[in-house]
Image (cartoon, rainbow, N blue to C red):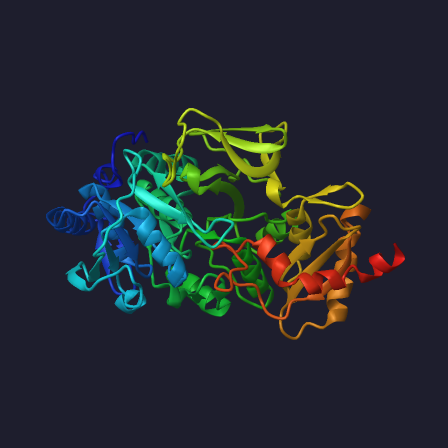
Length: 494
């Protein structure tokens, strides 16, 4: 599946015109109908002479048609996540130099100082003009600018070419071809590159049907609210062959099975990524009928670079590198080379250099990549021990009664944790679970204290990234007194 120099629309000429391609809440399009809709929208975009546009819409056919129409028209697309704050939307609009926004929610933009009025409708999406456009220096061949939530409140634009996106999808399609995955249900927002490329694009390259109902019908709202009963009902209804999940979603599905839900036999492959997943949780999920396989990737590489597969699997590892890229570990840090981003909006990338991911890891003798944490997140205890908080957190979060856990202990004599238990969980139950976890950990990594968080950590509260990872510096500042209280005895004894 060599796609250099092609768009996805060009690569999708082979499926029969009458084969099902895209299903939404109220419509089912064949490949022939999909290509026709893409062509009509691309012609409208070319008539309007738009070079950079934003896309803010619920999951559905319109989102994906707009995405592909931009590729055909040569228009740079900037996906706008539904959970971005007004300040983040304003930053993204200005930084990317977008000239207009396609949206199904005009009211979301009426209060932004950068936006004007809706001037047209394109395939049931309103086109909102940006009166004062700031020209952005995009790298040549930029097709999409995906904004990551970053480590601060200001998102950072990753510039991607068609080649990088499509060759990532093609590498995944080659690996998954033997599984016969012909029905993919989009659960993550399509503005998430992982669902966009590894979900929709990969499924189409396999000649499959992409099912993209609205996020509300899946029980998803905001960046972290999930009605698991509604999600299970949607999976039962659509009978997908494949899904992509975040770790917390997997945990909730496992809990649902424990409570009586039975995963449909149609499921053949469930990819889980976006954070470390404990091997025990993966094995437990499989025993319960969920064919889960962990992967690893980053936006700068078009989403996925390593993946476990049936017959090439190591629970607890992130998988072997996909054939379109290379991975090595230097001084404990994971480096990647292969199809990659063109640069950030403010910084061009060297296409031949190894990309420093910032992730800590190792490659075992069988070639599996093991991610152990983030370089910048390493805790160094007052006794000089280097500790990855993600390692401890993944063990704590195996409990179905603990929703969130953030381990602290930098420059402290021992590790402690801020924990948000599920409502109705008493502290004694958490104490008992932490005692069990501590039996698996060396003494320097054991949790000596914990405190309950007064409320869950959220993206809207600026304490989680868009994919649910804790913003550790902001959490440490917000809950400084709570953290200090876990070390009062240590201060007294010293």
